[in-house]
Length: 334
Image (cartoon, rainbow, N blue to C red):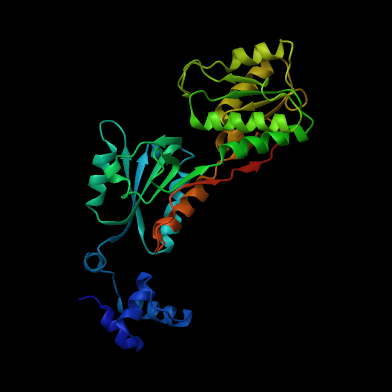
C-alpha cells in the first residue's frame, strides 16, 4: 500500500487540501516552507500520485496534448517542443504528441487525443502557415503554435516575420549596404511577410523598396528544399548584371549556404564584396559556414514556453494572433 494524501496531511499537521495543493499545484495558499515540508514528507512516505483518481476528481489527466503538424520531422522546429515540455514539466505535468500526416485528418487526431482526457491541447506546425481547423474542434484547441487559425477562432503564437525582415534589412543598411537583393521563399506565408518587411525597410531608408530585387529560391511555386534550386543561377546573373549587389538577404539558412558557394564560384568575398544575412538560425549550418552566418533566430522555444502559460492558465486567453520577435544573431558575414 502506498501512502495517501491523508497520511501526509496527518504527519504534516495540515489539511488534505493543503497537501494536494503542495503536490499537485492546487489553489491552496501556503508558505514555501510548508510546501517544501509536505514534499519532503511525501518523499519519505513513498507517495505516488494516483493519476487515475486525480483524473476522476478533476475531469482531466495531468497531460498536455500536442498535435504535431510535421513538427517532429524538423530538426530546429523541435525547439517548440522543448520550450513547451520544459514549462509543462515545471507544473508537474507531461506532454504527449500525435503526428498529423498521411491519411490522418485533424478531426481524427483530435478525437483520438481527447480520449486521454488531457488538461489542454495545442496545435503546432513545422513552418508558419494558416490552418483551417474543423469548426467543431476549434474550441478543443487551446493555442496554435507557429501557425494561425484561418478563421481567427483560436489564440495563435507566430513569429513576427515582417518585424524580423525589417530588423535584418536595417542591419544591412546600417552596415553601409545599399544595393540589397533578396532571394526569398516563394509560396510561403513567411516569405510573403518577410518581403513586406524587406521592402518597408528600404522605403524607410530612402531606397526604392518597390524596385527592390526579390527572386525565388526555387523553380516551384511553393518553396521546398527538395525543389530545383535557382540560387546559383540568380547569383551568377546578379554578379554579372548592371545592379551588382553589395548584400544578399536569404530566405533561410539553406539558401544562404547555396549563396556562399555561388559567390565563391564568382570570385566574390564575404563580406568584403557581398554581405550575407538570413533567417532561421539553423545552428548546424549558420555556425559552420565560412565566415559564420548572421541570421535571425526563430522564437520557437519562446513560443513553446508561452503556449504552456496560455494552456495552463485558469482563464482562457483572448482570441487573437500574438507575434513573437526573432533574435538577431550577429556573426561575421556582414
